[in-house]
Every structure is written in structure tokens, then in C-alpha cells.
Amino acid sequence: MTQHLPFPNERIAVVSITRHGIALAGKVVAALPGARLFAPEKFRAEAEAAVANTPGAATTYSGKTGDQIPALFANFDGIVAIVSLGALVRLIAPHLKDKEQDPGVVVIDEAGRFAIPMLSGHLGGANALAGTLAASLGATPVLTTASDSRQTLGVDLLGRELGWTFEATHDEVVKASAAVVNDEPVALVQEAGSPDWWPRHANGRSGPVPANIKQFSRLEDVDLQAFAAVLWISHRPLPPELAPRLAGRLVTYRPPVELGA
Image (cartoon, rainbow, N blue to C red; front, side, top):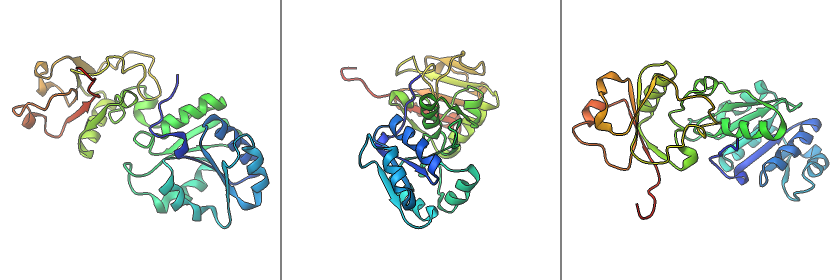
């Protein structure tokens, strides 16, 4: 299944610091046309050869790799690192802010066997990027986010590939996400948007919608006391009389409004 990335390929940096890793990085750049390769200056020849079919796609740097992290974080939305997971943790740790700002970061081993989202799996797009790389390289995506490992619904991803946006505080998203992955009753109310959201959700879902998620067509039909969280897909404003009863446990999704609708 084609993955939906929340950023263009031109906003993806591929970083490698070894000769063998740079060869693999060339395959990553080929799989993500527009992405850029970053490597140490001592491997300039190898880096340019790895992206020979896309002249200008390689950038080399002098000094420590850790010194490049601020610029990479500032200029790219997705980072693919062919670096050991532990080493990358130490390199990026001083620069982390929060999930709304940090780029999606994926680590690939030098053999190209595993694609591991290590930062901003959902909002930052690392899980989707890992899925894209896995399909292109024949690797295994190692998804550790609960909703993905259990193939359930990702509250902060619902409808993103369809252009939906969501309205909720951080705490409301956390509460609703916890309800979903802990099998608490969750109401999903769809009054607008494409009904074909589940098969394309996140990295793709093949089974049925989880049993703890009950679907409705109107918000007024929901017994609000029976549900730990409510996911509401609609174009209309929240009825004022329902706002107090949904405080702290509502996530609202806004599909694009079709012209003429």
C-alpha cells in the first residue's frame, strides 16, 4: 500500500557516516526522489557516486556529525539516519522539543533489514516514512507505537491521508488515544468526509475496525455517558448544550469542504 507522507520528499534528509551506509543511502534517495544525502567530507567521492543519477543531491560536511543536527532539524521534516540507534539517540537528545515540532526520524541498519521510527512516529510522519522505506528496500518496519503495533486507530492520524485536520488539546488527544489502545468504549461519529478512511489509515489496516470503537452517524444519537472518548467527524460547530458533557474527551475532525457541497 502506498504510504502517505505528511511532507514532500524535498524535506527529507538522509544521513550516513560510513562507506557501506552511504551506498545504502543512495538507494534511499533513489526511493525518495528529491531527498538529500548528507555525509562526512572524507566520503565525498562515495556520496557523490551513491547519488550519481541525481547530481547535486549530496552534501558533505566537515567536523562532527552532532554539529549538523540543529541545521537538519531546522531545515527538514523527515530524517533517515543510517546510524546505530544508540548513537543517534545521543546525537539528537539535546535538540528535542516536542512532538508538534520535532521532525520524524527513522533509523535504518547498514544491511537495510529494518526501518525503525525513533522520533515523532505519528505527527512527525516517521511511521509512514518507515513504511515507505520498508516497501522500497524490502525491509521490515519496526513500529512500536501502540496503535500501529496492535493495528488499531491512531487518534492523531485519523483522516490525515484524506486531508482531514483535527481540533483538540494535547490532553484531549492523549485521553482519547489511551481509551482506544486500552480497549475502552470509544464513539466514532461520522457526519462528513469519505467513509473509506479505515483501509488507508496510518500504514494501512486490513482487519475490521476494533470492537471497542462504536460508529454513529449523528452526535446526538450517542449516549455520551457510555463512552470514554468521542471522535467526531463533522463540518458543523459543536452544539453548545453538548460542550460541557464532552469537555476533555472530544476530538473533532474537519474533512475538506467540497465545492458545491
